[in-house]
Length: 88
Image (cartoon, one colour):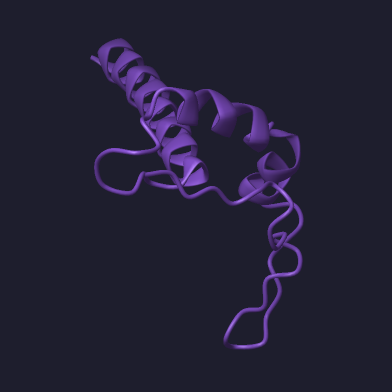
């Protein structure tokens, strides 16, 4: 089962925080929100799923964001390990 939320959902700039603050427009996640082709990735992700069987799919933005974070952490850990090896 597929539930899809379009890229035209609430923008991060329009998101209100409970304490009355605002999100920093220079934050890397705010910047990436504007340049990542969410709808294109969502279409490709949902093509791999059967719309009539199984549990409801996770939202494409959640899956794509998790993959981005995973790869960023992998790169950071790799660079950190090189730093440690050079420091020895």
